[in-house]
Amino acid sequence: MLKGISPLVSPDLLQVLARMGHGDEIVLADAHFPAETFNNRVLRADGLRVADLLDAILPLFTLDAYVPAPLVMMAPVAGDTLDPEVERAYTAAITRHAPDAPAIARIDRFAFYERTRSAFAVVMTGETAKYGNILLKKGVTPVG
Picture 1 (cartoon, rainbow, N blue to C red):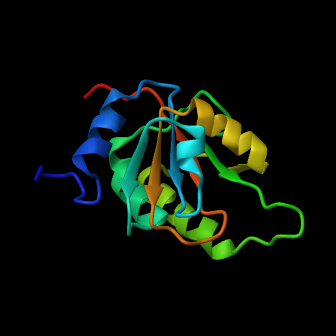
Picture 2: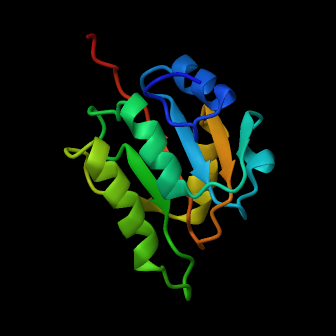
């Protein structure tokens, strides 16, 4: 165990976060997401909810301040509805650790899949909420 690091952040996830450079992206995927189809670096975080993982990761992770949308979620497919509680829970975690972050952007499903292809890694969680995926773009970590 390390002090100051949530036990939800596995050693593998900690290594991935440390290896990411500014501009790299990581996807926190719900349990239904076809991660292995779209990315070769997939970590497992079975049983963990995305909001809890955001709370664990964001104290260690600077969001990219040089892009308009460092936080991206999948927009619903026509005819589907979103559970507003999902984004509300994610936003609460984000606001705790990155209060100046812009609102979460939404992109269509296939655009999200394309972003996942080029992401540094995908973390498969136990999140069961529909449209529970979120992409984080890493920024420059301040010195000191």
